[in-house]
Image (cartoon, rainbow, N blue to C red; front, side):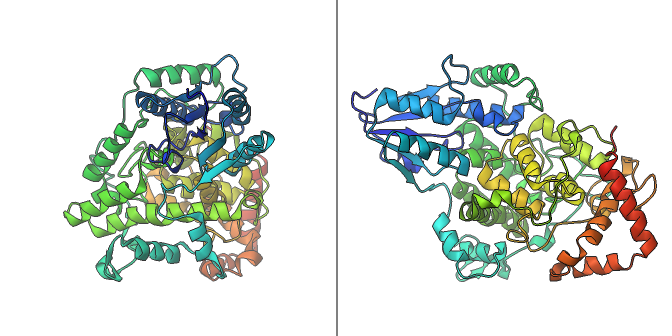
Amino acid sequence: MPSQLRHLVLILGDQLDEDASALSDFDPQQDAIWMAEVTEESTHITSAKQRTTVFLSAMRHFAARLEARGWTVLYTPLDAPDNSGTLAGELDKAILRTQPQKLVMTAPGEWRVLQSLRSVACTHALSLEIRDDTHFFSTVRDFAEHARGRKQLRLEFFYREMRQKTGILMDGKKPVGDQWNFDADNRGSFGKQGPGLLPQPSRFEPDAITQDVIQLVNQRFAHHPGSVASFGWPVTREQALSALADFIAHRLPSFGLYQDAMWEGDVWLYHSHLSCALNLKLLNPREVVAAAEDALRRGHAPLEAVEGFVRQILGWREYVRGIYWTHMPDYLERNAMQAHEPLPEFYWTGETEMACLRDAIQQTLAHGYAHHIQRLMVTGLYALLLGVEPKAVHQWYLGVYVDAVEWVELPNTLGMSQFADGGLMASKPYVASGKYIDRMSNHCKGCRFNPAQSTGETACPFTTLYWDYLIRHADTLAKNPRMLMQLKNANRLTSEEREAIALQAQSHRHIGHPVA
């Protein structure tokens, strides 16, 4: 380590980017890197085994890569005897040990972490230089400028601005194909025949580093949910690039058409499985978008698939980051629909008779993964209709998914899924009956509940709770023009039907949820 330390550069578990702004002027003769594995990051919310494993393994691989350059990395493993268990505690010890002139870091992905590290720097009267995260196409300031003066924020307008600024999928001043958004073309289901022969997902055999982490996680977090028996996520830059190439070659062409489809027992389908590598910063969104554009130019993938994929990265990913950083910390406490039910216990086990929920939750616990429709229109929809406390839903999503970092997870969960922000993120609550799940999957075929029924022994809980949600929140939802058709349908219910639905919903909510 340098005898006199100029910069102690802080690298967090979701900042594994050799081109990070914090490292832009790194001088191995004057600077050192600080990284720490701490219990707090797996226990402030209950982090599932797959999620903890992917973070720790990727961190260890990244540290080894930097050390191979000859750079000094002050790395604290989780099982170090004197590990304080918190980022603040470990940084405090590192400062006392190294006496740096300044702390430098790339802007973190979580408000809580930022406040904790700032507090440590303040205690030591040290300057903490926080640099823009150049991983993204835009800055938080760019988003704030976009939002200034607008009565409503909507992704579509932000996305179009991003297309125009970057030139991505543009033909001069016009969008390629003379259409900004091909969402209407990307809502296909597999039909009765099912998805057929699917391409194999990119999975990576755990090496010695990952095997050590798996053993550590199984020991230290034995009672945390999920299993690491199937672990195969990319944890290095090379693996992430391989996963990207595989997606472009084998799944992007059908990604758009089937991005909303579900099928019992089929986990991976035509999705990219790249969000984890992107959010760890093992992949840069620019190279991901460029690869998709190249596939379009080569005629390898249709425009509707490429546009739908690009919209998720250039549009949605940048948009939710802007929402998060311009509205925290108050955003975390929002509960516009006054939902206060506890999260059902089966979210931690998957033990429920509802086939769609069972499949999505068991898949989540086994792999740390579910695609966006499973998150929005199965696990999220049920929690919304049931009236679960939004913060409890957020804590579950943050804990169980390998790609979950708060900047991206919180707005998606609290805003898009639970409508707890009252419409800041989404233009309407994404509510539907069991018929939506029946249309987009084969789950209902093997389920004892009938999505067409709202009352009775075989009534689908989604359908019961859907009508109950519309009835309970009618006054609030009537102010939203996009909900008028659904409310019109609810108003056709007779008083007897309304009473029966309310009783069945109350029984489901308070007496017990169907379990296997």
